[in-house]
Image 1 (cartoon, rainbow, N blue to C red):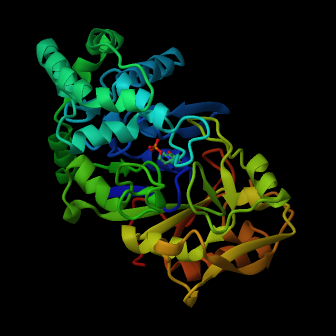
Image 2 (image 1 turned 30 degrees about the vertical axis):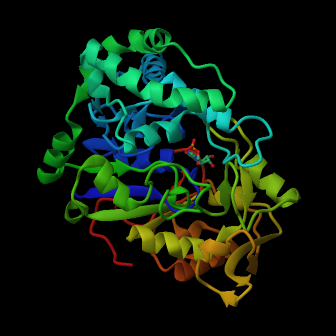
Image 3 (image 1 turned 180 degrees about the vertical axis):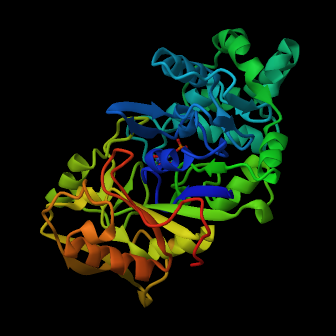
Length: 431
Ligand code: IMP
């Protein structure tokens, strides 16, 4: 069984929770390699809804080891709350969740700075999740961050936190905030120490050993390609690397050890927060997609912006991630629309292009191809032949123009509402 990387091909929220859950049925290990509590995966199992933020979706499968790797930033209070919630609903986490001692700690002052920068009506706001993710990565790359391993030594934790807080103090004052006292910061996280320290390990060697032993390892991405700090719609991005290369860096697995990279693409597009979104809909069709698709942020509850599928953006994701296969999600949400559109190119100031002009993404005009809609419910479809002709025509076009074969199509939120086109762990078809 291979090591498989699963990434979002759009702006996140592609329905990773359900798809990773399908993959984890036979996974020995599920690893999150980047981001932090800005992610939110919604899972529906036996009509029960679970939302996980830090913990990988694999936690719902009893035989699976879940790993939070060193590429992540972790708010210890969020982690403990999440573990408590899972345990209270009968999901055993002890002994099944391991956390890197090199993942970085999100402190209350990171959350404070994120909130102050993004405050009401701020003109240059990014629209972050205000979970302190960006400021925590700033500390990490400025080489003054605090890895979770510091939780093992109170004195060291105090010294490291003091140093980082001193750097943030003028920034907090400049933003009009009150600088928190070191003792209060430490007191806020102190109760989490005894829960978290036993979970800490060197996850790099753990994951790498599992991959070498040909265990079933799923590296679960968060966010999406266009939110990548290097490859996304900068500066309207997150502060990590949600693309496939980020899996190697964040988990500590060499690229030659990855067997397959799967991209998730929703049958339409959504985006949360600010930034360009050429195919965005501002009409009742966009509203209907939001309502039917329950497109509200699972972390912040914010309504997601909705729009048509963007093929130049999809092809870009296929290339940047080196995708081997695409999993299409939420096709059922489009049921009932008179027409379904898909962006095939853009008109730019330099003429028409089928590539992704990231530099002028805010000013391009999408060129659409229109498909006839369908009205039949899709939830019962288990093969492509079960789909209405119109839905198939749409999918065939997306697969051909997306330049990557489909591995599955999701037609509803439940595990079994899925058209599986090949064994997720079987030999792959090259793009
Ligand atoms: P941050 O990651 O909280 O700093 O937010 C930066 C940008 O990424 C904002 O536009 C967020 O809405 C977006 N973002 C972060 N995490 C997710 C996610 O899991 N899904 C969708 N958008 C996200």
